[in-house]
Image (cartoon, rainbow, N blue to C red; front, side, top):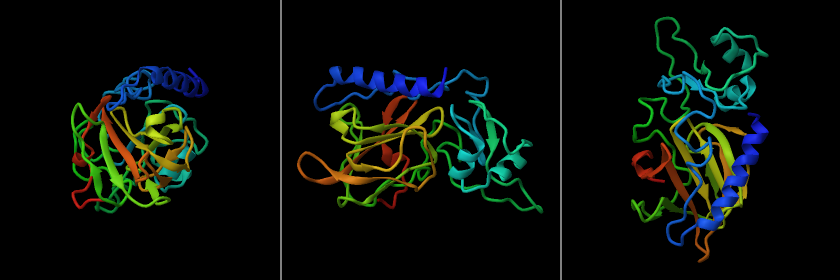
Length: 248
């Protein structure tokens, strides 16, 4: 299965979803494509193994250069830490060291990266994600009634990636979300950023935690804000359980 085919299939499935949206509780195509399911995009025996701190499990389309860029490293460093040649290909499901090994008896703190790397995957941990926008929570998460939170801001404010990952959707195919970005962080965690005015990333891009990915837009009432959702194993969960308590 090629990367281009996956992206094309994703668009087709998103378009098909438009006809079954329900007002007040809009559905998202989280479970209907490999990107949004809890299983790896390509079957692998590594798919169910927890990824320890300082490591990253590769997604389809990843390259050493792209992974190195997302973690603020050089491709040569990633290659050296993993015993690879600098031009080695990366296979889906492959687990790579992305932080320096322990040196001189001291622990080197790995860069903040993929959600779930700082502990057991699939378990909510306060502060694993960063606030995508600094502003008040205008709408809280309500199970069965809303899929995420609404964060207020000013039109044009930068929208940040909550964690390192890969962009699996960037477009305007779902009217209720406006210009939307979806980022896959690991096999169980995905974040979505709706109601942007401008999208600054495209599908397939590797992004680092805190990287600007879009700009705040306004909703149908003219309120400058973004819709922020977190999906764990394909299900909506309260983003506040993953964000720092200090607020946006």
